[in-house]
Length: 388
Image 1 (spheres, one colour):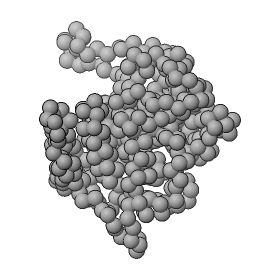
Image 2 (spheres, helix red, strand yellow):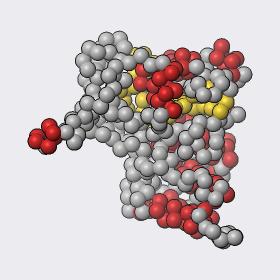
Image 3 (cartoon, rainbow, N blue to C red):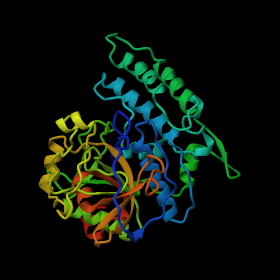
Image 4 (cartoon, rainbow, N blue to C red):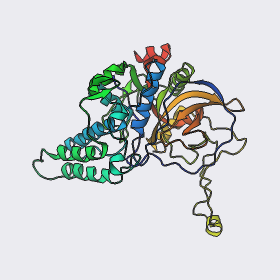
């Protein structure tokens, strides 16, 4: 049983735009415990940060304690595997910084995991205080493409050693054994000690070009492992998410954050009129030197009602793209009683909500690519339809 996606594109996952904050009075309906907000910085590793953050939340939910799981460990094995797939497909699979939720799940199942403290802090070996792939990634890419695009009849078998050297030079040596809280572990025994059943986690999506209540591989570049998602009608996918947060579950959320109305530092929703009201490049900008670049909802106009057909059209026309992985961990309502999902991001503790924001149910319905969730968070009637 496979779970899947999310994102971080082949470039860095959507740098924060300078939106004005929304002024709202929030009342929390229910929220699951989560670990601290991290910062992926100059790397396309949101898929990694969001997935590990989700599993850290699961450990808290189950009373297993607080952990800081190591993104560098996952990135190393994922990039080595992705490079191998690119070579084996003669370059048809992309080698990129982005990935899917399933990449992390695959690593946990097959390679294990280690705590953050057993590897160098992200970026520290290159003199940075956070991930910064600017220097490392072009080196790795050059090694992979030199092999994947070769016209030679055979390839040098040491190319993987060369790539491993570049990656470990940046991430640090991959531990085979380590000490943690007085015990000796391998990455696999440490993963087992966490007590999570990796087969309990499934990916859900909602698109009409494949039959509902079956599994299919989302056709996006970063699903390079061709992992499968269960396909639900939109109303049932939304019911799963609502049921999860109302019952204390978090889940990993893969979404499109490229729309001009996406607001990373406030309350994001889908305005009824989504035409671009930007003045960038306009005569007004020419004479004033200023441009309005944000599509803001018109006061009092309400939010667009999202349908299954709208979701599908946005996917088919590439309006909805695989941009960013985050964690949804709760439900809140604003001063009008409108409900929003509470979202944990991985862009550091920016203002006004410490690296978190609120996403309307309309935005989530429209721009979700997929979620990774524990199967027990799915209502029984829907689970039965999926044979889970």
